[in-house]
Length: 228
Image (tube, rainbow, N blue to C red; front, side):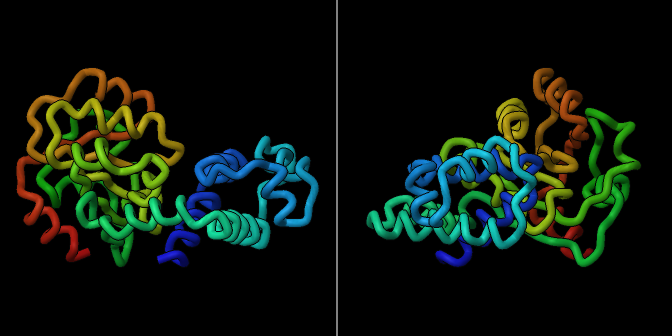
C-alpha cells in the first residue's frame, strides 16, 4: 500500500500543470518544513524553494522520486501518522468511487450516445473531446468523507476521462470541487438528475467542461462502457 501511495503522489506531480506547487502541497500535507526536507536530501533549502515557486525547470523523474521517497521516509521516522491516514483512505476506495480505463479512446460524442445522455452545458465541445476512461463517483460520500489530498486518485491513469456522479441533488457541489482542483475531467455526467443548478452550469462554462445528464442506471452505464 505504501508503494501505491508513492506512485499516486509521483503521478500527481508529473500530471500537474504546476509540479512545484504540487510538491509544495504534498510537503505541507506531510507537515514537513523546507529545511527538514532539504536536510534529508542533503541539499540547501533554497533549492526546495526554487522548485516550489517554479523558478527551476520542472523536476525530472529522478528528482520526483527522491522527493516522494524523502517525504515518506521522514513521516515514517515520525511514526507514519500521515501515511497511515492516507493509506487508510486508499483501502476504502470502493466506498467512494470506481475507476475503469478503456482499451482505446472514444469520442465524447460516442460516449454520450452509449449512456443515452443529454448534453446540458458546452454541447459545442463534445465533438472535440476524447475519453480514455471513466470514474464512477458517489457524490455525497466523496465530498463529505474523501480527504481533499486524495481527490487526484479519481483520475486513474489518464486525466482525459469522464466523471460519472451518482447521488447528486443539484450538481453544484461536484462542480465546485472540480473548479478548485488542479486537474479537470474531460466531461461530467450526472446520473438521475433532471435539473442542473445554474451555478454548476456557469462553472462548467468557465472550465470548458461539458455536462451530461442520463436517466439509465449505473449498472447499465457500466455494462455499456466496459465493452470498450
